[in-house]
Length: 258
Length: 163
Image 1 (cartoon, rainbow over the protein chains, first blue to last red):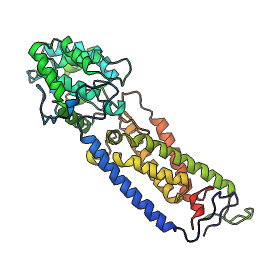
Image 2: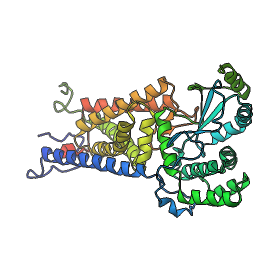
Image 3: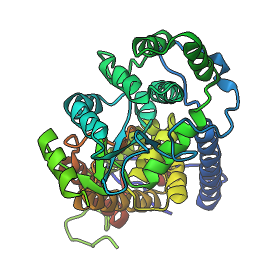
Image 4: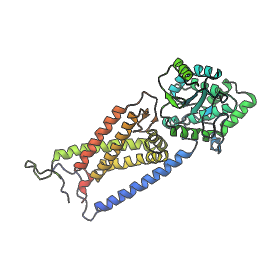
């Protein structure tokens, strides 16, 4: 039995007939195990829904509850696979992979600085441009805008407008990171890049149904498994590129061309 | 375990060391409760943060991420209450050692991630990492935990009220 130190234990001694240390230890141990199991169950449940916890930005797409199955947008390599901007690129040109999150401000800067250069190389068949649209910022920013913007971009891919749509998204990033986009803003991006008429109707239906949300979630998982841990990340033939200027990028692509 | 010195009024007691121990206990416990509380409301983000270290397989990293906030809260509460101090301090020390290894690994391999220690986490824009600060903080907490394992006797602790 430990005597209380002279510096005072403010509490009185527990009654002799009270719970012993072993009993309390057992209770704590059981509590710990239960708490961990519950946390894992809740965590898994919260992670598997394709629609993350909802945002401050009001979302009118309540039908995101609909099960999107495993739909794959036009141009994607498969379910959870990246989108190949120019699949018709010649076999001897290198593959340029860009990992970006729609809400990432530095990704917007990257697109503004390198977008035209990359587009020019794509047009000249000098590079195969592959885009991995990530959506982890929804977790950090506690909204669902990355997922919704990515889904909207893939719906635009079905209309042949993926790259212009994403450029509009980056150009239209909110003043404060975390505000996200409203459905009206996302629709404005679509009409702004020329999605009209029946195409717009199809796009709207695609967005309202959340058709590619499962694909977006799978793409995010695969990007994490591929070891991408910073955005934007650029890989040329699988090798990460760092500290290149647009001219440097062109030179690197040229050097990698067989 | 405690040295017997001629000057101490009662063999084995050092009141001022008890107070220091209390401060250590409250410090480590407070940090752990804060860290756990900030993470427990967003378990998917906690899982994501652990995965970003790329130290564990994807699924296992997820489980660690889900469990970690709860473990931190539990160990933190035990330390704040001064209940089973030696064991709680040992658990806290293991956690801190794990964080030091994880953050050190991330730094050494050139990952650019937010440590996720107080919520947040996962990939971060390169240039916003704060590895030295995080490592120093966790090493300090590891030291305090180790002290408490060696000398778990503190003032105002529930341990003192239990037989």
